[in-house]
Amino acid sequence: MADKLNGILISEILADNAGGSAFDTDGDGKANKADEYVELQNASGSAVSLDGFELWSEKEGLLYSFGSSDSIAAGGTATVVGEYTGTPPAGYYDAGESNSVNWLPDGEGSKFDSIFLVDTNTGDYIVLSYGAPPRAPTLPSGFPGTTRIGAGESIDSNSPNGTAFVRNADGDFVEGTPNPDTPGVPCFIAGTWIETSDGRKTVESLKPGDLIQTRDAGVQPVLGLRKVVIPMSRLKDDPGLRPVRVPGALFGTTGPLTISPNHCILVVSGLAELLFGEAEVLIPAKHFVGRGAAEIALTGKPVVYYHLLLADHQIVRSNGVWTESLFRGDLIADEASWFREWSFAQGATLEAISHAATARPVLKRFEAEVLLDRMQIVSVDAQQVA
Image (cartoon, rainbow, N blue to C red; front, side, top):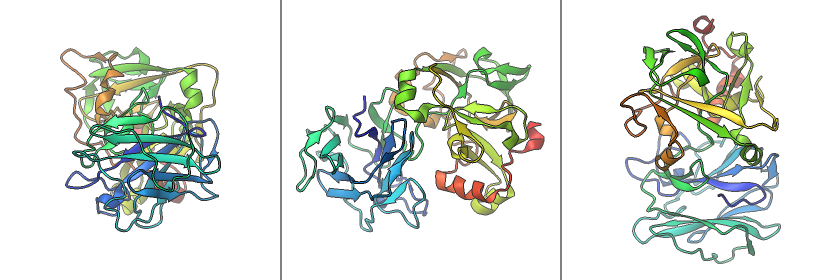
C-alpha cells in the first residue's frame, strides 16, 4: 500500500513525455517534456498544509518547493507540472522549467530515478523509485530529509513515452494513461435508477444483456457489470472514494443523484460551445461540490458501487440525469485483476472491450470552474430528462 507523509501520498507521475504519444497537461496545444508532472493526493479526512513540503529527484535535485499558503483539501490533489503555460488553476503548480528536458528523467534502458516528497519542518520523507529495473534510492546532494516514512515504493518500468505511473485499486503503481486531478473510477451507487427498454431499474438489479437507454445509440446491451464494496477503512483513509450527492434541482429532476466523485455528468450549454467548441460536455461530479452538491459524510457503513460497461462509452439516464457509462480507458491495464468479479454477457470479456474515445469531451477542473462560474443555472437538457 501507499506510503503517506502527513496523509499525503504520491498518486501519479508522468516521467517521460515525448514523441507522438506525449500528453498535453496544460492544454496549450504543445505536448512535450514540459508537461511532465508529479501528482500528490490527500488521503486523510481533512485539509493538509503543504507549507515546508518539497519535491526532489535523485537525479535532478530540488524540483519544487510549496509555499505557506499551499494546501490540499481532503481527498484532493496537487499536481506539479514542469512548466504550466498560462496561470495554473487551483490544484496545479508550475515548476517554472522552461527548458525541462531533464525535469523528470525517464526509465528507458538503464535509466532510472527516485522521486522524494519531504516535509522540511520535520525531515520526514517518502520516496518512489522507477526504472527497468528500479534501483534503491540514493539521497540527492543537499536533500533535507532525515527519516524515511514507510518502506519506500518502486515500479519496474521503462516509462514509455506518454505513459504515466498510476495507482491501481490495491494502491500499487502500474503503467497507465495520464489522468491528473482525477482520482477514482466512475461508478453508480446502489439504488440508482437506470432507464432501460423495460422502464426504470435499479443498477443493482441489472443483468448482463439487459438493454438500457442511451442518448446517442438508442437501446444498448449491458456487456459487463461489477459490484464494488468500499469498506469503511478505505473511505476513512481516502475521502476521494466517498460519493457525491447532486440535487436533482440542478438538472430539472426531482430526486438527487448520488455517484462517485469522478463520475461524469452531461452539461448542455451554449456557453460551453462558446468556450470549448462543444455544446455538450462531461463534468465530473466532484466539480459540482460547492455549487449545490455535497460530499457524503462517513456513516459507519461501506459504500456499494456498481460499474456499468457497454460496447462503447455512452451517455445513459440515471435518476433522470444524463451521465456516463464506464469508459474503458479509465481502467489501467493491471487493474483487470481488481475487476475479476465482473459479470459479463455471453461472449464479452473486459479485455475485448476497447473504447476509442469518450462520448463527449471531459472538462478538466479549471475548465469546469470557468464554465460553471459563468452559468447562472446548471442545465443538463431538462427537456430530455423530464
